Length: 387
Length: 217
Image (cartoon, rainbow over all chains, first blue to last red; front, side):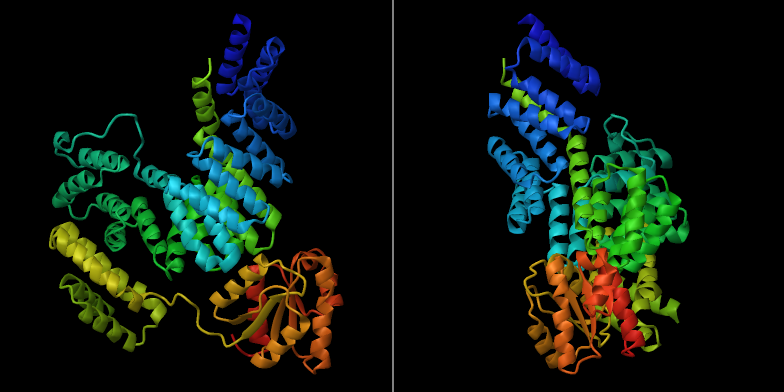
């Protein structure tokens, strides 16, 4: 028994560190001692999935579920394996449905269930599943992306585009771009108390940035007010305050501050970003948004998000071919960019390339579940209740 | 002129006078500035002035917010038109009889509509006689027939035959769907005048036909 636990712990530790091959060997060693532990089978399924061995993943996950029908991480691995293998939508629907039953509060199970329904052309059932996911978590971006794609299929791009933008706002990657442009990084320390911030411009701007990062917009705005009281032509401060307004849905205030900042200095990337986002929220301003995001994409070519934002504005102008180029550029820079994958899928749908579109959505699902570390969350929760 | 107008619009924002804001915009419009340029010519500069005034402390937070509300109220007067101008070109679109694939058709129809074409969407499973009936009702000269199965793609020839037998040889049939994208010769064999390979392709093709053959668009 001690041997089994040791091999299990070794397999688990190696898998958590991403050492796939030695972890697989340790799993097999553990199974040779005792093959009745569902955790090892589902661990093996996850490892096989990581190595793109879908059939092997299906076998191991199925074995884990056969041993214990409550083994939720095995359902996740099995569903992902079916989805990524392709051509097994009926089984996929069953698995995600089972997972949604075993873990009814697990948002991703409903999202995946919707995608499986959609791939099997059960569009209404798919929409119901994504809506359920959004009921459980209104900030679930992938459910919103999928609803936007569903709207595209039924009513075209003009109806779908606001959905893509809404999903993009739920997706934290857009805010990450702003903070990168502003030079604000998460150093793990809490934002300072505004009362303790020294009376100088840079300290105030830094603190305001940190407070904005923590979504304390009012405290951040008060510090920026102090900066502007000393110099009303501080373009950086105006760029930051434009973001604060944007986050509070005050689009005209954001636009006013961003435009003022750019009147002072055209080289204020935060203001360029805020102006572009403000434009993209206004119907009919896609051309303006495209101009601004094109400039931003040139200014920060290494970041995927400006290319995505540019592509979205091109969708509004019906320039689908150019949008596809921009999405592909974004995916070269960041293959895990879920927003770019869904955007590209939308463009592919307009071109009639349905299989390619579905493939992009499947890749988005893969990256999204990995980013969220869902397997380990479920695994830990499941293991917590086991001896 | 534009600077004066910008100042007037800015002052209308600050004094929360939507009527004065609209009057300032109408004056610029009467001066010959087209609708699609109003946003850049007058609205954006006025907002920039507003941002500057708030930054300098010339107006307080409440005035800034209220001015922004007025700006919101009059945005529709300066925003470029959301939908394109009517091109006057009527396009009939539908999926061939016994073909229930709607996705490609829906996306193409919505794209053409958004671009200002008059789109008559007949849905899926449309018989050649129904295409014919609608053609005669509307006087359209472009018909897009979608087919995503080889069998239904081959049936498009029946649409051409029906049009020809009724003396509508001038009607342009454009085809869309997987079989035609995979085998362009198929389109010719069923009597189609062109292949649509997606929404942007539809825009280009219909736009070109409207310009070159129908003298519109």
